[in-house]
Image 1 (cartoon, rainbow, N blue to C red):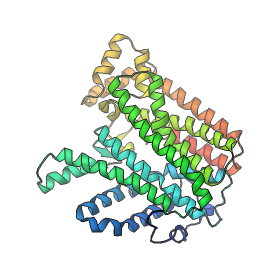
Image 2: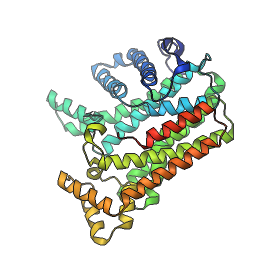
Image 3: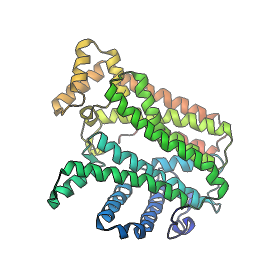
Image 4: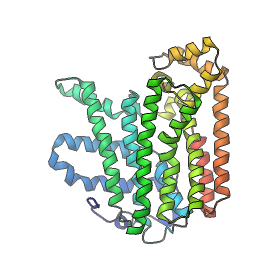
Length: 376
């Protein structure tokens, strides 16, 4: 089941108090990063024989993964396991956390590829991977198209992240029964996130401006692999029954969509100093979000033309401000805020009436508010 970690999951986390570990805290982030750092170290014996260029690519992936992020997906997976009765003091707890950490590599794949698709230049305050390797090509004075080189390398780095996500799961040390419950959910999640990305690309190319299409993309591109399936994965590891899995998935879908709706608002109105991305970047990238779809649904011909003409162009700050004002005046921002509130409430209601442990219910309440009221 893949190349093992240089140390077992229990050895890697021997200094971590798994019983006290709470998602969203610095201690949880540090524990996940400890797993990831050890995993990257275990890959070096595979990477080094391929030569310096592959070493550089692997190091770029490692830096991308370990230098930022709230570890949201592992947090929800760990909470799903706890909520279904998982015991953090049990011997298998370290293996469970290791498998949860693999979600960060799926996330890395999605982000690296998404930045290429959206032509984004920064991520978390750093150059995106394809821009980084474009710059390396230029600095080295190599032949050929530097931008094409940067995109090609970034595609492969994203692919490597997805492959290594599987490797980390396989190296986690899960017992046979737990792995058998985990694997089908893992397979569905990977397919859903790729399918959601394709729906997004197709929606933009095909010009589908409906709110329904935007919500479908949110469901599969973000909600499924950010909250719904991580919770499902954790619950599966703990052997949860169908009723609890259904409640967790309802929460995950609703809060996951609300999470993306908040992201859509931040992509237009967020503070660059907090989000790490230029202000109004989603407008320049031409993203067909629920915010934009709702604005177009409400718009008169003049306002609709202004939105359609501006989206996906190199807008200056004044043009961004003008589009923002239109979105506010049309009531689209208020509508998205309403959706966020309603989805968060229905998600929380599903958990409140479920068989999840009281501690997990409390955690999921706080995590829902953190996901939907954030500023970055």
